[in-house]
Length: 219
Image (tube, rainbow, N blue to C red; front, top):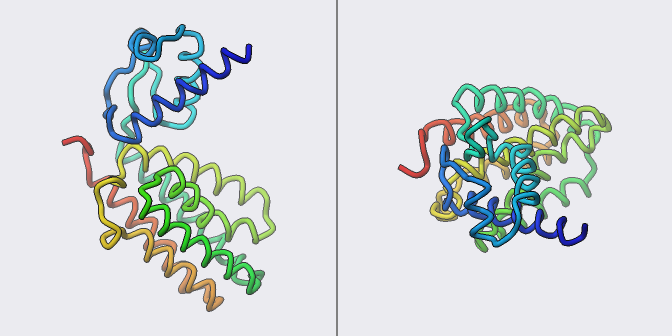
């Protein structure tokens, strides 16, 4: 049982890493047979690994076709990011009334960690920190239901970033999200709800535009 679980984790990490490194492209078919031969293991843990990747929005399991690397439509991207904008602006409204100085310090530390992750080209760490930056206002809002929804949408859009973001090719000086996050933290530091709403909306719509402009990151 332990070996089966280890094989599932191994297959999951290998396929996910291949997608992150753009070795597997949007719309590309990924068969259990091919993975089995590549990783030299049975199909059972591979099937479980593909199901996990489907739950993360990276793989689409199609009857009679197997697994296909997911390619979200512009409509799907718009729906998710528009909802994120509404929820995160609301979280910000609540946060400015409850934030303490130590909360600002923590978010400033997250900004530093984000830069370090980008310099190291550590995509997983970058996404982890990105998720914390976006979820923290909801976390200190003392609304657990809001936090759950913000975190769920963040996790879902992680898949979009993996599939469509040019993380490995854009130099740090051209990265938009880092200074945009900085403006969000600055608005929180000033306890300025209006400025915060503007910063959150501008950042999320900027990210949406960057992701939806590309019909394929492999062209």
